[in-house]
Length: 444
Image (cartoon, rainbow, N blue to C red):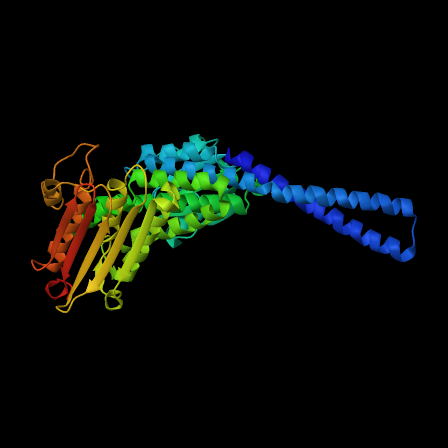
């Protein structure tokens, strides 16, 4: 599918170039004809041809957006599927699923995934020469893993493990898979001809490798056993859970057809959101950075539900903007409001306020005017033993893991002088209040 779209895009570019070149030549001829008073019949014919070429060029320029939209939508769909393939890490089964999925999405004749020493999976024409468990052969793969840089090559020589004969790979692209600035493997694309390797194929290889690396970084975080890492991981999972990822990708895919400019903006913001999620998990960040991440989250939800369905207000005390707080302490509260407080109709108003107090503390409040919850549910919201709730329950249902995670981190990081509480009225809304005692912080 990707191959067909790529070929179509290249054909359109070539035709545009031909039409523009012909139009320039015809303009030059007309200038010469008017200067030297050539036969008027030939001049009229040239004018007609010029109009035709310009019309074709204009049509090709206008028709490129639908093709670009199809290309973007397909890329997002493949990315979403790949995340599911490697949710358990870089296993041989997951690697093989990725190879088979990407084989039909590029011009490559073979796609392979390796760890730092051997092949994990290989699909395509050369699959028999690179079985799982075989050692890495190509120097470009060793270089990409060692230096963490994507590499393209031509005429790669390797020795077939089946026959012992030397064989040649006409061209290839190797992109490293990296977790925490360390290469853990490579994603490789082998091509039948050097002509098949262009900027589009290189961008696809690098992009898919970065996406896989991101998911592998998340998997690595999931393996941490230390208490703080586990608590922060739950917050991380709340940010990029499969439902949120799927809904955001679907929203962007739909906008490529109706509002390409906004789709491009959302793609850029999604990349920033995802990068910030990985960079800040397990660290302290300024309040204003956490607010920026929260606003990005709301940008995606407004695109999904409609700009008029979520009305947000931020009141940030200038004295609190640089205060250091754990990552994912505000955004999950806002996500809880959007996921559980929104009514079937009408706008949900969400207000976020952050203030520095005179006793060296930070007060954070997230208030909504949504469906609310009863007093019993509100009192259990931050409880350690919050059990499962029915899917049709009001705002408290399904929010326990994220809320308990926040409460656990506040107590651990800021001591007994800190607190988290929820006040809610059914049908009127909910206020979540956090009090962070900076003097009792383990970071002070």
